[in-house]
Image (cartoon, rainbow, N blue to C red):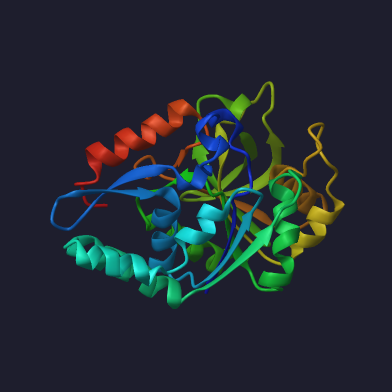
Length: 285
């Protein structure tokens, strides 16, 4: 069973400047509905943490960089703040935060620093001494998934096929903006991946990498052998391609059309996430 996740959250959020100059992208607010039909505003980090906790993740390795202290602070219980809320009669928020703190205290959360912007593929290497040899979920920190269903299906597919890696895929309209996968469908939503390319100028595939993956320990060796891109970064897409060159088995698992997965890395996509979270969270998944 997959019980460990690596979350890279050290990026500068360049396409969301100036707000991300001081606020990490993973801390941007999203609406969430309470059982009493009132709305909360939570940072994306909290939604991601709780959703992963609810599907069995208990070990978190979060990669951060300079100026990301708010991420660590938010996942550190602050009981003096609960006392303050109690004095002011804000009992509904006490219950919400107590529930979060309970989950935090039942989890192992380890922070690793990426001192230079060396790419998402590089964060895999930073996590090695924390994760060890067991398979792990690798989840980009700026993804908004309101539903937990994809995680469970991804875990099941990994257990069934036992690949060295399984990458999340979604149908996209503009291949130039995504890592793209090529391959053949072998069962419902499952693909045998033959090639991946980071942001190709021309593509015959509309299968974009969603940013949610499972890898075993072979990813470390592949990341070490992967050359830096023209930007001076180790791209995760290139690490996956290196794995295939080393004859490791890589599968793709496609999100269905109803599974919302929004990369909040641009103003347009962040607005989509806000709009969706406000308008549709009353629906059951």
